[in-house]
Image 1 (cartoon, rainbow, N blue to C red):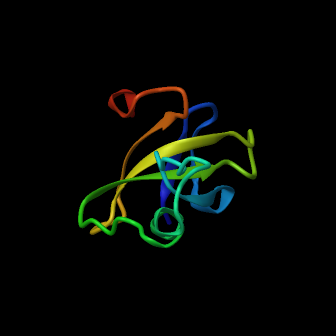
Image 2 (cartoon, rainbow, N blue to C red):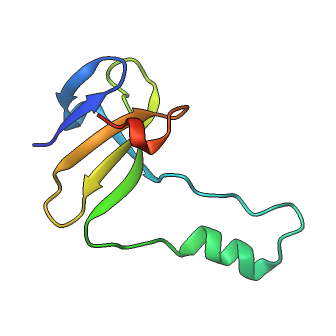
Length: 90
């Protein structure tokens, strides 16, 4: 079981959280063409190594935050609030 550090509540077990997808996505503008929307909706990075994700602490403070997780080992490398830069991850 993963231990995820909530920036507000501290370390907790994974069942208290829900995955919210890739972090730091940029929404296409209102004038975006269908191809740009297709890329946004269906294409995602699939790196081997550090990957930034959004999670929500559903069984605790209900706050959204970012997690850096190693996709090859599933080890949590850090977490940080939405208003913090990734360099502040702990």
